[in-house]
Image 1 (cartoon, rainbow, N blue to C red):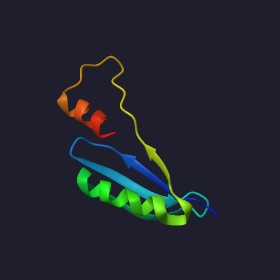
Image 2: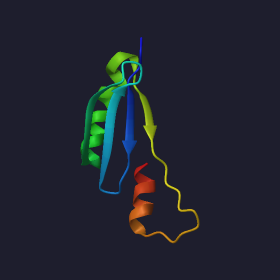
Image 3: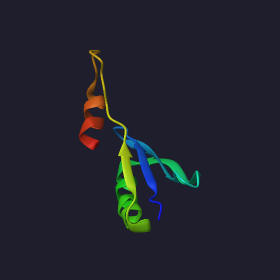
Image 4: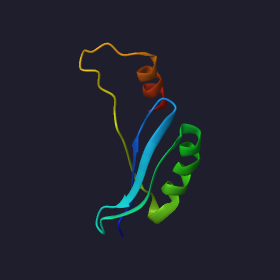
Length: 77
């Protein structure tokens, strides 16, 4: 049985996500939603097909100055 992949591109206020089957190469859902709404969706994907694999993009500043929004995104991750 193939597990779905639930991938998140986090933001400080809203985040983008995609759910897809890597074997069938099918995207089931993709959207950009407020973070609170995304939290509501995660339990659904954990329950689908024995649990989805979750991937979350990480923040890297590479020595550059960053603002409060970046730190808020780190907390959200």
